Image (cartoon, rainbow, N blue to C red; front, top):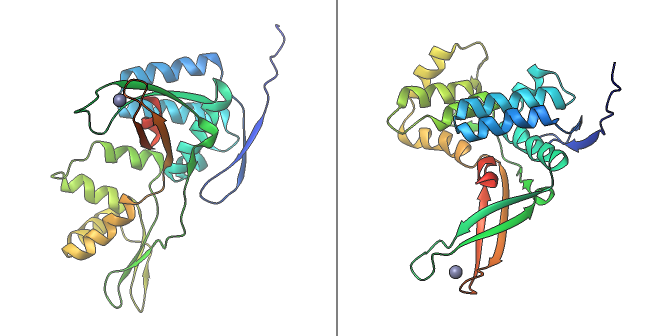
Amino acid sequence: MLPNLNLPEFVTSLPSDKREVFFRPFLVKEEKILLMALEGRDQEEIQNSVMKIMTNCVNMEQDELESLPYFDIEHLFLQLRARSIDNTATIKVSHTDTEECDHVNTLTLDLNDVVVNVEEKSNILMLTESVGVTLQYPSLRVAAQLDTINESDVEKLFSFIASCIVNIFDNDNVYEEATVEEKIEWIGNTNKTQFNEIMKFFATMPTVEYTLDYVCEKCGKKDSVHLRGLTSFFS
Ligand SMILES: [Zn+2]
């Protein structure tokens, strides 16, 4: 038997509840899985690979990892990437307005500076005087559905929302046991204002974010780029 390669262990805290979790860097064979998935650009394949590597490296049960809000997974992924390969990411950006200068700048940033801003926001929405809904942020698997939803795809959108409903309540009851079908029907019965209120919760969902100020190497103009979401760090 060849000797084991001892792996260092790192610790980070989850953006959602500040809980400390331990992880080891990913191995060359795991990095390979990831690179192949990223090249494929197939969302589902990427999500599966990310989850597989997470399960291997993060000291948490798979069930628990799968139920974490998506932004915790994004944070863990950037931490893993920073500790396993290196802590810098290289991105290519052009000006928002490319009329005067269409130069593409190559910039680097430190992944340890990337944070998830979890603002204190209520997940309980009152839709009428007496009826309200308790929502939760989507897990990785549920969030993955969002990428394939376009606006006309009402059915998919409703089922996405339904999987994020913890309960619906009124003055007398908390309806914890509603089925997905019942929730979908209930969402269909909201009016435009109520529906928009629900959608706002998801549109303002926390995610990995970073604002990078830079000076264009060609025209010398100051500009800045706001990166939001995991994939924007690997363009
Ligand atoms: Zn320029």
